[in-house]
Image (cartoon, rainbow, N blue to C red; front, side, top):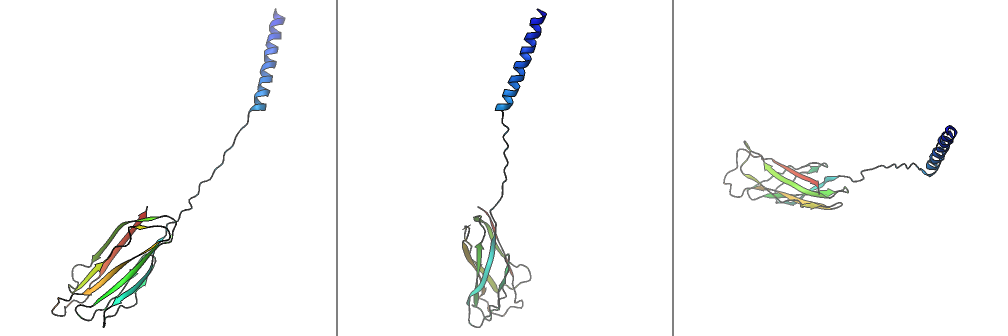
Length: 164
């Protein structure tokens, strides 16, 4: 009986050994590697500013721009004169843009009441590859009866696009 038990134990050990070899023969370790990469590019920028209209006797100066700012220096000679500047914005990136805000704030405080500004709004949506323009019009108020003592007034504009 003791011999039978030993034979059964040995037989079970052999069966377990065969099962282990069989399991390893049919087991496969799978390895998965991956990489994620962002390929989208954000590139909304100012690409130009030009004087679109200049009243006779006025001087539009030489407007300048960088990718994030546009600057002009208008010189108006008499009431009713105006200069219209056209500013171009381009979406040179691959991500579509949506206009979050466009605010234009004339200077306050010790600045000329004889100068007015009017603006248009750029496009609400600026898809990849698209351009939009808007205008800033500088006007010497035609209702002014006397040359003002203070002869300058600034404007600050912020145009903000966000991803769509």
